[in-house]
Image (cartoon, rainbow, N blue to C red):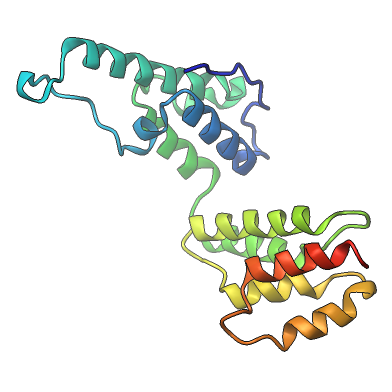
Length: 194
């Protein structure tokens, strides 16, 4: 499997969410994400299950790759948070706890960002929808998911006036059709004629 050498912005006081998303995909590329999340544990030597010393060595190499990738992609002033930690999962959890605490102020910040999220002049519907989905994921990550109806309303709420007729049509849809993905698809199709 070929891996790619990707440069990302190092973790600092202001970019945890973007950094975490970037690191997640780097770890997926390096086949280390299961080690970071704890869904893949260190293999135990067992000839009956064909788990060999080679499997153990390969796991340890990927575990080392995981922790070094995390550590080297942190700004030097924040490396002390995980300095001395050799377990990628413990390091990941420590960084998350430090940079993204699960508290009311974080909830309020993300909810405010969600409510203020508007389509920018010249921005396409897909990019705007992606911003909303990203905020939804962040809120879900702190155990405060956004209801799908509110996602739909936010997607429709700040569209330019040229979308008024399609918005009115969408608002009349049945409950089982009034879904975020359905609305996004309808808006993308309609944007070519607006």
